[in-house]
Figure 1 (cartoon, one colour):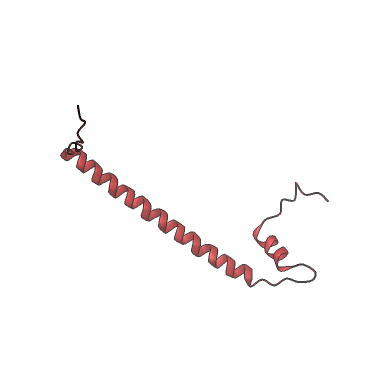
Figure 2: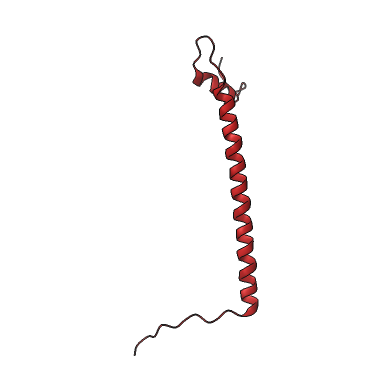
Length: 80
């Protein structure tokens, strides 16, 4: 007895309609996520440009200055 390969049954019109709706929804979600990521990347680049224009003063390094700008200090947990 041999097992024959069978094609899947054809989709009904309602199933095709639902598949088309789901495909459009997926495309809409992908487009909105891509747009959000592009906006965040643009904001990060602008932030990096602002941070790179900051110069270090005194004994602090540029890295220390960037850390002060980018990472807020938590005073109530810091030791004195």
